[in-house]
Length: 169
Image (cartoon, rainbow, N blue to C red; front, side, top):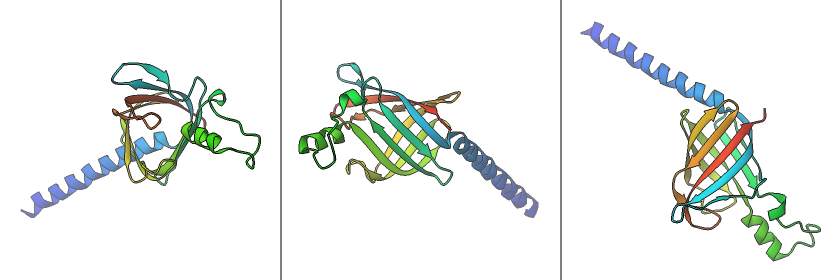
């Protein structure tokens, strides 16, 4: 009986180790900073596909060894107001700047196929405390994220967004 129990314990420890190594390996691949290459939104009702933040958006996403992440995306400069100064900015410009960006941070969980962003802080308080899930495809130094169907933060339409990121470090 003791021999069987010890085998079971050994098997369980081996299984847990394999799972931990697999999760660690997935995190190792993800760690670092990535620059946004493109972002498109497909509206589910119409099938229309648009550049989410214009033709040349700017964005970075960083994943740390500590399990934390940060992301900032802004629309291309042609789609954002350029106030003369911080002191001269109008309320309309503030609103337009807010509408043409996305930013949040929190923890992440990555299994090599799916990334979960557990959001602690966000540009849009409606996202704080939520989990955002993306399906991930990796090819070389590029990651392609596809969101699950959800209301798009910019216009509220049920959409799927595809973001392509390229590692910079």
